[in-house]
Length: 166
Image (cartoon, rainbow, N blue to C red; front, side, top):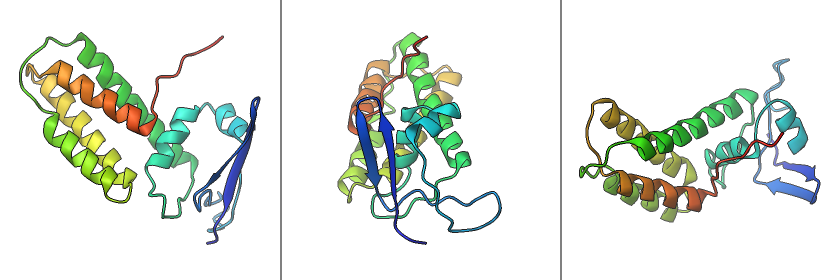
């Protein structure tokens, strides 16, 4: 497989992503065939720029990323899991059990290890699983600390909730 550049145009200008990315396994089975998509192509299929960001975070910047629509769907599911957790935490009864501190440490260790975003994302999703399980079990977790951790991570990753415009 070769290095590639994926680019797209927006109303405000042209943007390119260079990360040795965008190799897609074509439905015909031609492994290694390259396709390049505009952001418009992604949004026309119902995906958002944040879904694409989540996909990019799942690949280390020094590694080639194999783009597939299935991987983009998985990235969207991960994003939705995180936003659903925020909503659950915002409506949860406050408690004192700190479940986020060890995940915070692991997250920032991954980021400081050559910007290992795939590992950091894995830590974040592990936190989401643990927090959801604790909420399901009725554990009164430290909601403020958990939300602060998520807010910090969203800032580092550039993750924002999208607004729908009609």
